[in-house]
Image (cartoon, rainbow over all chains, first blue to last red; front, side, top):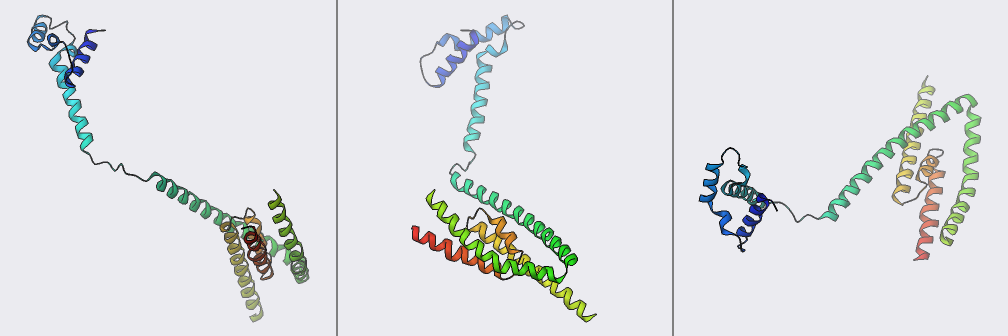
Length: 150
Length: 71
């Protein structure tokens, strides 16, 4: 274990009122050592400097504790809200796509009917009115029955 | 000339009615959770009001009755 690590462990022990080597914290001795080897000494090993740094960090931690964070968040509610917003956006996009598609379809139909004439419109409508209900209603019943069997 | 204005007015009215019907069917089918809501929407653009009646028969009568019977 390096000198610095020893010092750190000792300070932590001191902070939590546990047993520690009192000689390591002897500031006067430490200061003397600094005076003697001022140029070569690693300043971070100095007890008082280290204690000061630690106290500053602790003060900052207190500051964080004092800030009133809203911890009582309803995460489920937020997720539901996000999903609702997502669905709303998707619906809005699909609505726009549908309007564009419907304009395109109607314009294509109008061009076809302008070329074919009024007879074309009448035949087309007659086919839809007479045949589509007879096709769609049994088809719906058939698909419902198949879904139930699955 | 007057006849032409009437024709244009009727054509615009028809387009508006068809688009409203198709849009309503599209939204209604989507709300009901139907997978084929795009088809219903396009189906609503083809004719008025037969397709709306067919849609209402299929969704409100056939499908709803089927659901009730299952419950």
